[in-house]
Length: 335
Image 1 (cartoon, rainbow, N blue to C red):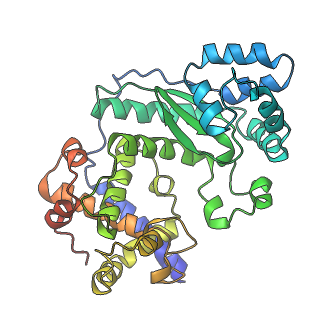
Image 2: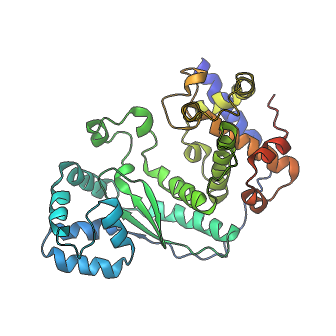
Image 3: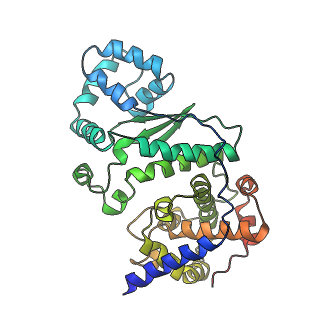
C-alpha cells in the first residue's frame, strides 16, 4: 500500500509540473550539430588480429590525441612508440574480463542510434546555452570497467562496458552491488555525458566544502542535465524509480527539517557528506526506505525555488558560484 501511495504521489507531481510552463523547453530546431558515435572500441580491438603495428598507426591518425590519452591514462600501456607497448596490448587483449566485456558490448551496442539521437538533442541545447562551445567528437571504448565517461581535448569518451544493463552476468562476476548496477544502463549514457560536461564547464570551487554547498552544486548539475534534455523522463534523468520520486516528494519537508535539526547542513565531515550525496542502497541517516542521494534531490528543489522566486535565467544560475546565496534567496520552505 505504501509503495502504491508513493507512485500515486509521483504521478500527481508529474501532472502538476506538466501544467506549469517549463522555462527549459526551448526551440533548438534550427541548431545543427554534427554528432556521430564513433566506435573506437571496434577499431582498437581490431589490433588484436593481424598486424598490430600498422593498425595502431591508423588509429593514431584517425583519433589524434584521444588514442594517446587512451593508451596512457585509460589502459596504462604507454604510447605506441614505447618498446613495451605491444606486450602490454597482448596482456590487455588476453585479459578474460576485458574479452568478455568487449563481447558483451558488441552484443548490447550493435546499434547506438538511440544514444546518438539523444546526444544530438543534448548538444543542440548545449550550443543554445553556450554558443561558443565546440561540440566534441563522441567515441566509445572498452577499458576493463575502470571508466564511464571521460572528457579529453575535443573528445567525449564513453566506456560502454559500464552500461551493459543491471542484468549483465559480468557485473555479478565482478560482485558489483545491485544499487550500483541500477545506474549501469544504456539510458544513463547521455545523462553521464552531460554531467561530465557540466563539471568541466562549472567546477566545484566552494569557499567551504560542506554538505549544503555540495547539495546545491549537485542540484545545479541535475538542473543542467534537465536543461539539456527537457523532454527526458524524470526517472531517467535522476535514475530514480517512480516510487523513489514519490517518496522524496512525500517526505520533502521531513527530510529538510531533519537536515536542519540534526545540524547536517553545514557539516564538513566528508564521511557524512558522502552518506547524503553519493550512491548507496539508501540514505543511511534517514533509514532504509529512503532512496540514496536524497540531499542532491533536495539541492535540485532549492535550485528550482531560487530560479522561480528570483526570475533567474539558466545562464545567470550557471554563473553563480555562491551556493549560500542560492540557499538564502531561494526561500526554500517545503510544506
